[in-house]
Amino acid sequence: MAVFENFPENARLWLYQANRALTPTEIDWLSSELRAFVKEWAAHGSKLWADGAVLNPYFVAFAVDETVTPPSGCSIDASVKFLKAAGQELGIDFFTRLKVCVEQNGSIEQVAFSDFQSHALTGDEMIYDALIDRLKELQHWPKKLKESSLSALVPAN
Image (cartoon, rainbow, N blue to C red; front, side, top):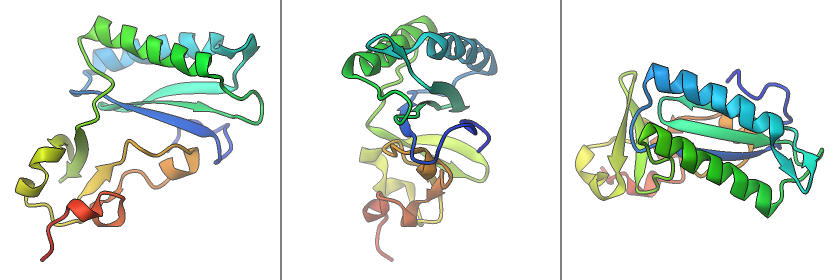
């Protein structure tokens, strides 16, 4: 993945999943807003070595090199506040936790965890795990459902 190229693989990563796909116009707007936000993002007055990106129509990510300046609780809160405000502007919720994005045949759809069993998933589908927290994990993202932490949700054959 071409984003966050100037960051070490152990950089901290935060992923936020939208409750619907962003349009191309929304992606452009949000990408611009992200650049402005991370340019000023700081922890206790010290600028963070950070970046933000829209990874696909469903995911926004922030990366921070903690070896330069560790993020603080207040700086993390600032990123959450930023995304809540952006979500309000776009009419979107970036704090979706009851769905998983599944890629099949080149398209991404959101599946509610409660509907997971009824989707006839084989385990070979690619899933976007929103729980990864290090940049190195993004190199293997998405990954096959059967190789993920969600593999227990695939019905046994």
